[in-house]
Image 1 (cartoon, one colour):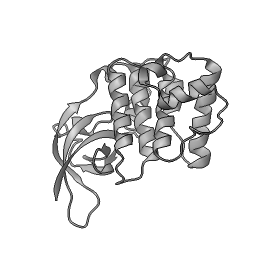
Image 2 (spheres, one colour):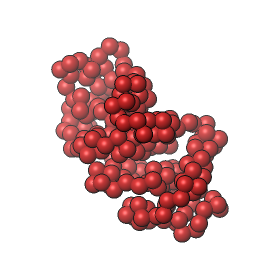
Image 3 (cartoon, one colour):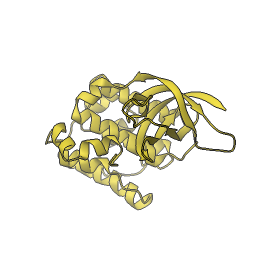
Image 4 (tube, one colour):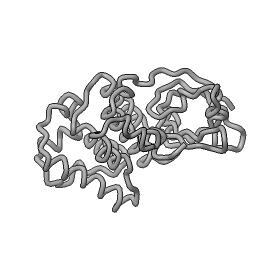
Length: 234
């Protein structure tokens, strides 16, 4: 069976010598693990479609009785070039992808999650970014996944809490950023993932350790490539 769907690449990892397993969050079918055959060869086709933080129109082939599609073609709709030129934006986008990957079961479509992710990436591409955006995205994705903290007493100002969950991205960017509030919220989200879901977010560690050193330093240390490959070493 051949089917087409729009999708955003969340991460990828190597498979055998020349292939990749790519996690694509699709509009109609949710999160898929897709085999990109021979994509790691120097002249491998579809390489751009297999990179994290890429948006495309994909064509998949699914063998009868299998739940593991193969990418048979497609068209790149955006690689978000502005995001890729800016280390802070790229790490923020990778954080979005990691949150979606860890909060989303396979083959469970959610228009709300898809629209949230694509909208957030487009906001970053347009130049919209703030200290609050990562945390607002995580809170909204948690809400969409049924793990939300929206109606709990989080210890933050009620107006701030409401904007983080329901405000437009420009309203989120305009929030006054106090280090105590930022640190409190970051710890709250990390504890939630670790204690409630048994999952550990890896991207924040790279943001803390490398955002002040420049993207070239991250690449030299082998971290930039690892994060782009969703914290693997290809």
